[in-house]
Length: 251
Image (cartoon, rainbow, N blue to C red; front, side, top):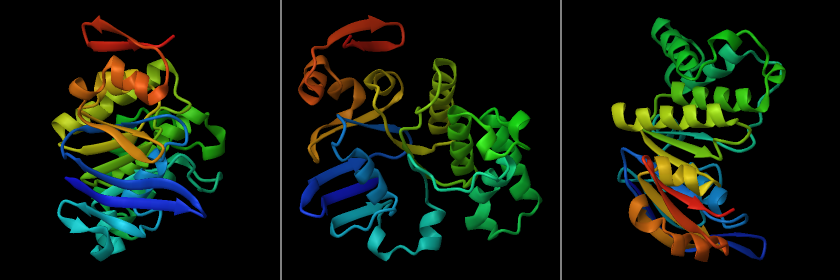
């Protein structure tokens, strides 16, 4: 479980998060939703310690971020940010191998190589493994970064807008794969996502964030309603039934 206790964050004089308190359950998919500028990515980066936590406390499986070493945290959490600064002239197989750094420190053994191969297979990158990063489409690069995080073999996987640049086929395939990881591999996945219908279809738990404050949090089926979405996004929504759950029609 991730426990967020009274976390606030500012950039200059601007309040980005204000007294955020929440619990994110393990072994499932948690979706963080909300309008642009709500503080979603900031919250995710604070959990992943990509941004310095100055006010409040975050604990991951009972260990505070303040007292967890970088090496131990890298074995606990893998994060894929929206903008990943990686040299473009790197091959995909080399990029994914970076995910093994917390385990191998750059000296890959046969087991590490097996994990890298498995990651490429799982995210449909085998045919692209010898291409350079700048030769890939945006969607292919996105899958490569997620495969690198998967190869890190952590309990927690943090993804900031993982569906960016993915077409309908690959977006659905990725969400299906993440669901399998949560169910079959007992992975705990936290993702920032804009499309509430993907959250409604695949997430187990949902947090609604606006103006740096939590508006709702709980089991997705309980909290992601027409009323909550209308209040969060300021749009009219109709709830439609489907064999796979609800669809929030906001068009």
